[in-house]
Length: 233
Image (cartoon, rainbow, N blue to C red):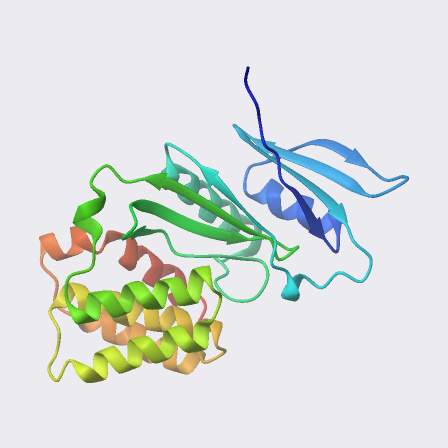
């Protein structure tokens, strides 16, 4: 016996949802106008169903689902490329948006797509060496907490306070890798909080950090995110 679970997610506009998912490379495999508005989009093994809800406010949505994959990097690259082509940028604030691709301490490499319906589509792949991603220093632990607050809980203001407090508590300039991670995350949060000027200053600081080849390899995801954010400030 084999079972498949398919989420049915709410939205305010089927047209907006379809346009968004087509930009991500999904195909519309079903669409219904009456008696209720309904649509299905598919890409590979990902199948999502949507329905419209009268008076629905995407900004107040708490709908979510989780997609597991064996190629999270490939999906992230395809989705960001599609959004750049459709919108001219990778949106990181408001609705819709796409979050950063990150290795998380609980053993998953993940990013979150928030669609026009406000639905958070979490896409992740188990890490082969989960223990290696566990935060070690105080700053690293603070960044992990900030990521969970900002992405999983959606509280960008609380996440920003955690990063600010951690940087202030170090007493000295941290090593390049955690420093850049903190600056990029804080810039990301600044954009979400409607403070592009601060984000610009932080990204300029990132550009001024001296990195060797090993640092750049360790910071590949963060530097990619910094480039995407730079196009928004």
